[in-house]
Structure formats: structure tokens, C-alpha cells
Image (cartoon, rainbow, N blue to C red; front, top):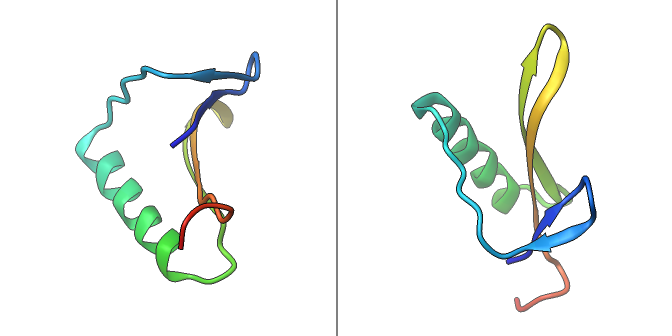
Length: 67
């Protein structure tokens, strides 16, 4: 697992992600699709407000790792 802060391109080692129940269900569905659909390499859980992106969690598969 690798966690990267896009703002400063630094690797983070300790984070907490707080989700609503709906966001957790959405993330679960996205992760299931990520592992089941060939060619899909990342999923996005985004928080929009007023049409603007406020926060975004991107989860991607490391295809260079173990099989």
C-alpha cells in the first residue's frame, strides 16, 4: 500500500479516512468493480460542493506487484 498526498507529492504513512455509511457503501461497490473489471485500474470517491471538487479519494491497483 502506498498513500500519496497530491498537493506535495509526498508519501504518507498514517491517515484516517472518515466516511458516511453511504460513502462506505459506494467505496465498497467501487472496489468490487476495480477487482472484477479487467482494464479498470482506478476508482474515484469524490465529494463535490456547488459543482466544485472539495475532496477526492483515488484508489488504484498496483499491477507491478504480486499476482
